[in-house]
Image 1 (cartoon, helix red, strand yellow):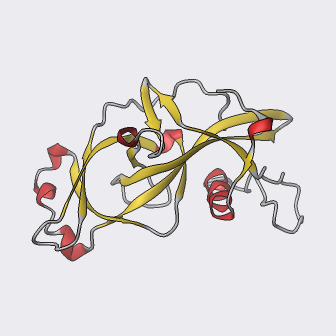
Image 2 (image 1 turned 180 degrees about the vertical axis):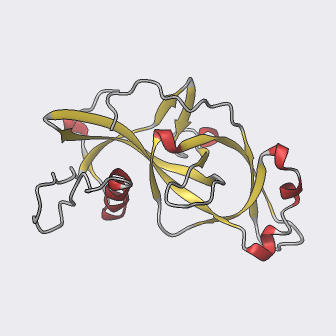
Length: 195
């Protein structure tokens, strides 16, 4: 979908901050400054507005917000800020196109807002019946989200997962079983622009 300035909506401060952190992650010096920051450098200010879209397609797979298509909203993703190589599980809350100027060129890219499921504590993790079968690519998570949503690039997504909710007797609180449906290659389809 093409970016439409007439359909722009403002990002919440929470999502805007997470987008700024994702775009600046691993960049030295940072690429962008917040609109809310005191102007004290040459970095461009990150645009506050975006176009909401219901889904995005990568490698013939559709990823969608829970509101648009719940089955396409459960994803496993890479946590770039963690040394842990295990993917995280989450549900897509929102997808938006965001545009900004880089070196005089307008770049438009999709971003995914994800509510991440809480990992099991170490004591409950030892009770996860799926951890003894690593070839199943299945893990338990609490059916609770962490407080802060994540903003991801599409390239951060590992795969969809099949979701099943239940309360294991040994844990005593509702969990989500996340079974990876990984068949996604890590190459990206061409988008409107990349960073």
